[in-house]
Amino acid sequence: MATPDDLTAVDVMDRAHHVAGPPHALFSRLRSACPAHAVTGPDGERFWSLTRDEDVVAVSRDTETFSNHRGGIFLHPDQVAPLDFLRQVLLFKDPPEHRKYRKILASVFTPKAIAGMEDSVRATVTDVVDQVVGAGRCDVVRDIAVPVPLRVLAGIMGLPAEDVDRLYDWTHQIERAQQSDEPAGATQVFGEMVGYLHQQIERQMAEGGDSLVTRLKAAEVDGESLAPEEILTFFGLLVFAGNDTTRNTAATGTLALLQHAQWGALHDDPSLAPRAVEEVLRWTSVVKYFARTATQDTEVAGQRIAEGEKVVTWFTSASRDGDLNKDPDRFDITREKVQHRAFGGGGPHLCLGNQLARLELRVLFEELPRRMPDLALDGEPEYLASNWAHALTALPVRFAPERA
Ligand code: HEM
Image: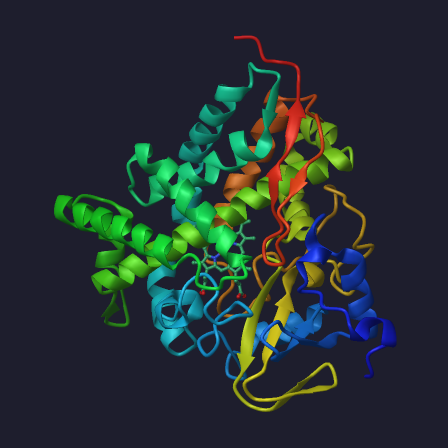
C-alpha cells in the first residue's frame, strides 16, 4: 500500500501533534490510508507506526517476532534509563523468561486479592475527597487524581504514608524523562528511588508479618521463586506502571464526562459506573504506544519490516478503531460490551494491574459524582505535550461546597 503524498512527511511521534490530546483525526487517516506508516526517527533510524486494531493486537501477541527485550518499549532504547538496566524489569522481558516472573506475580495479584481491597480504596478516595469538598473549587489533577493511586500503591507496597510526596516527585520526574530529548534523563532519579525501595524491602523482610514483600518472597510457581533483587525491580515497575496511568485515566476521564455532559447521568444512576469506567478507558487510552523490535524480517499490513526495525503499536488509535466498536468517536457511558486496548493488545504483557485500576476508577466515578453532583469546568484544562502519555497537568473545576 503506497503512502498518500500528504502523509509521507507526517511524523505522528512529533510532540507538536500531541499538545491538545491524542491526534485522533490523524490516527483515523493513518488507519484507513496507511496503517503501517514508515517514519524516520530523530536518530535517522526508520520505524513503523501501526494504528489499526488488528495489527496492534497481532504484534502484541506475537512475541517471537516482536520483542520487548531487544530494544525496549520506547522509541529510543535508553529512554528514561539505560536499556541494560530496564531489561531486568518484567515489561522488558520476552517469553519464556517473562512467563516465569509473570506467573509468580499473578499468583499474588489475583482478582480475589484485588476485590478484597475495595474498602481500603474507598476509604482513601473518601479521605481525598473530604479534603477538597468544602472548598467549592479544586484542581482534579493535583487534588484528586494524583493522591489516590499514589496512596493506594503505597498502602499495597507497605510504604510509610509520609513518603507519598517523595514517591510523587520521583514519578513526576520519570514521566518528564519519557518525553525528554535527553534519553537517560531519569537515571539518577531511578537510582534514588531504587535505593529507597531497597531499604523498604529490607525493612519489611526483617519485620516479617503479612505484606506484599513477604507474600512475593513466599510465592513459588513450578518450583521457582523470586530473588530479593527481583522483588526490587518489580516494586520499581509498580511505581512506574501503576501511578501515572491510573492518575491520567482519572483526570482525562473526568474531563470526558464533563465535556460530553455525562456527569449528571452518572450521578443519577451510580450503577453505570462499571460501564463508564470501560468507556473512559476506551476513550482516553492513556498509554499511547509501546514499541517492539522485529526479531526477523516480516510483514505487517502489507509492508515489509526488516529485522531490527522498531514497530510502534498505538493503543490509543486501536481503541478508536471502528472495527472494534461501532461509532467509535461517540463518548457514551451507556455503551454495552465496550472493547478497548487501554491495557494493551491482549498479549502476554497485558496490564497486570488492570483489576486494581478498574477498582480505583470505579470507586472514583461512584464517589465523585455523589459528593460533587454539579461539578463543572472552571478554566481551561492543560495537556502534557507527550507522545507517550495522554495526560493532563491541570483540570480546574468548581462545584457547590459540601456543608460540614
Ligand atoms: C488505567 C490504568 C492503567 C493503564 C491504562 C495501564 C496500561 C498498561 C499497558 C498498555 C501495559 C502494556 C500491555 C502490553 O504490552 O500489551 C501495561 C502493563 C503493565 N501494567 Fe498497567 N496500566 C494501568 C494500571 C496499572 C496498575 C494500577 C498496575 C499495578 C499496580 C499496573 C501494572 C502493570 C504491570 C506490572 C505491567 C507489565 C505486565 C507484563 O509485562 O507482563 N498497571 N499496563
